[in-house]
Length: 257
Image 1: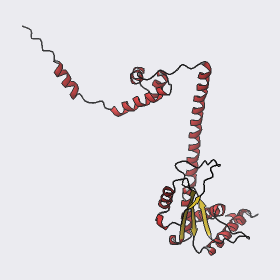
Image 2 (image 1 turned 180 degrees about the vertical axis):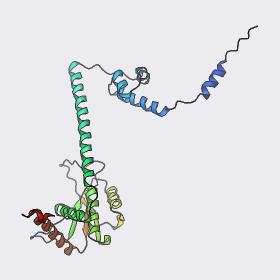
Image 3 (image 1 turned 30 degrees about the vertical axis):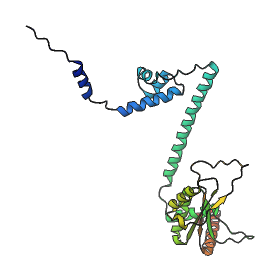
Image 4 (image 1 turned 90 degrees about the vertical axis):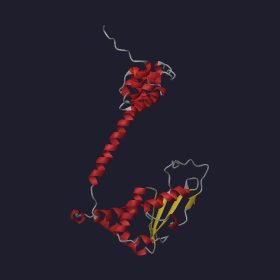
């Protein structure tokens, strides 16, 4: 008699499914599904989603079938959409070219010698720092800026000059409608100082008739950096600056080395 093996029961079949190894990349599939749904809600067709994500059209259909079908665009709307897509692509190319240019330029600088940092600091101070005027004597070192990178460079320059950090004071200037406490903490962390050691923050009154553009989340006002008892240092900075100008404009190029 031929023995026919018993067919697995439904219970056995379910048991095998339960112990089957899970998908090797479940998170990747979930990410694709989420992305597909986002694109569908933006009006993308199945073909475009398939080409963008590199998955099958049947998977796309399964993932987004419960979403409303995008409205058909008329010829004019299709033309505008195509133009917008081309422009978005062009902007992306420009952004990438901009990024590559900046990265290459940064690599061209390399390491800075003390003399190079010294000259850069003098020029930076003369461009951004407080300067003495015949009608308003201000022979002191005071520097104001909103760019954290500029502040870091200025402090590195003061260190190079041998200025002791305990002679350096800080104060924040910011619009009263901003996150004042957050800005004070940010600048204190940047310069490595205790916020309690900062001078009183200067609040700029908000004019309701003025449309401000510096209202983004990253707005932190300006940091004022001052060096106490710095009249002599200021005079040297002014002298250094005019020494640079004289060397750069000298008729004899040898004087520029």
